Amino acid sequence: MKRTAALLALVLAGASMGSCHAARVFAPAPAVRVSSAALYALNVEFAQSLDRASAQDVAHFTIRSAGGGAVAAISSAALIDTLYGRVVQLVIPAWFGDSAADRADFVVQTRGLVDAYGRAIPDADTFVRTGLAYGEGMSALFDTHCTSCHGASAPAGSYRTDSLAGLRGSGLDATPNLIIGDPNSLVVRKCKPGNSMFTAGNLTDLDFESIRDWIVDYRARP
Image 1 (cartoon, rainbow, N blue to C red):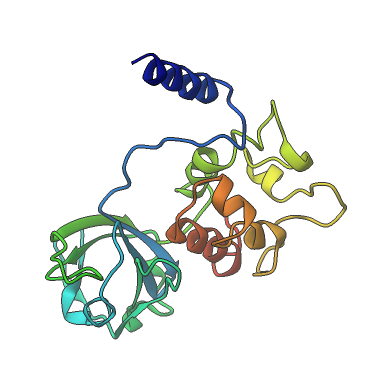
Image 2 (image 1 turned 90 degrees about the vertical axis):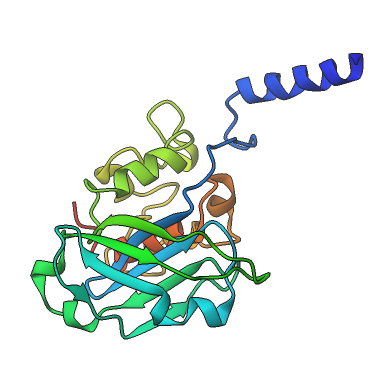
C-alpha cells in the first residue's frame, strides 16, 4: 500500500513539472477523424489499425454534402499510413479544380470496415470542412501539440509555433523552419512519424499529414 502511494506521488509530481519531455496524458482520440489532403482528396484516420483489403475498398466510404446534397464519387481508397495502418486517403476526382469544393462542409460515412485482427469497426458519420488553413484548424493543431514547448514562455530551439509569423520564422540558424511548398522544411521533417517532434508532441499520422499538406499543397495559407 505504501509503495503504491509512493508511486502515485511520483507520477503526480512528474506531471506537475511541465517538462517538454515528460509523458503527456490526453483524452482518447476520436474513433474517426477526417482532414483534407488536397483539393481533390481527404485523409480518414481511425483509432485502430485497419485490414488493408477492407481499408482500400471504396464501397466502405461515402462522402455527402453536409447540407444533404449529392454523393461525391470516390475513385480510390489507399492505406497511406505505413507505420500504424490507420490512415486512408480517399480521392474525389470531381473536386479537382473546383473551388466550390474548398472550405465546404461534408460528412464522411464509414461502413462495414474491419481492423487488422478482423474485428468489426463501428460505423461512423464524421463531419469535415475541406481545405487546410492556419485559422481553420492548423493553429489549434500546433497549439495542442507544440506550443507548450515552443511558445512565448519557453521557445525551445528559439522557435515558436504560437503564431503564423512564428511558424514561418527560423530557429537556431537563419533558414526558415517552414518554407512554403517545401516538403523538406525542417518543421515537416521533425514532425514525420518516428522523428523527434512526432514523439514529443504526441502527434498521429493524420497530424503529420495535415502539417505537410498544409505547407505543401495549401501553401501554408492563413
